[in-house]
Image 1 (tube, helix red, strand yellow):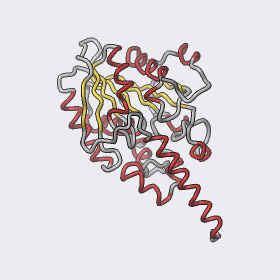
Image 2 (cartoon, one colour):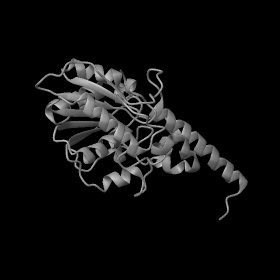
Image 3 (cartoon, one colour):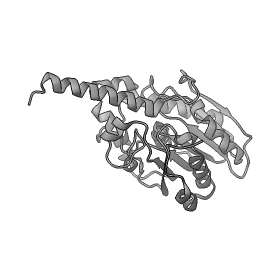
Image 4 (cartoon, one colour):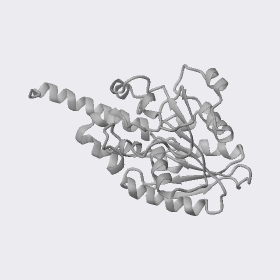
Length: 275
């Protein structure tokens, strides 16, 4: 059936609104800093022999500074932290993985064990890097809101997906989309804990997603084959790296290989995630 002009206009307006909400959900700057053009990393603490290093990977449209608050929490817990930035909007996915590979080799050359904490797209980057690098030093991994099965919002954007860049536009739910291709590799080969959010600042995006969601990724889509633990916390997608409960759960998983269920049950359920 041919869509009439009125329906076409409504569809276009809905797609534009969804794009705005999706970009705001995944790329709203926390510090006002633009995404860097090149890869960068900085260490906050000296590496304790008993705990090892933690590499932090941000999400789409963000910079290493987006992980700074969480990075400080990890450093206080005794980890040597390295926040790695990458050009998530302008670079193709394989090039991003190449860039991150070089930075991990530089920042963690002397580390006996390397843990990871990722947000959103950073989880997909880590999975691709781990499969390629096959590094025996990979320790525990915590992913925050990873689009492991893609986002239905991206599916609905049509031609507007181009705004998300060569990597962002591949974050749909189809088998040939980036998440689907990574899933075909099978279970992840490392200890993984996934934290999903179920609060949204993006009502139109949430309308497009099935079940509880964080405004960009459905809770069900954050699950990863082979993960050791999974917890849902009251935070929106953008707020995940800035929520106290998220930081506490990430540290608990890095320390123990599991999340703190008692703390999760006590987490307040009335907001989008508090600092």
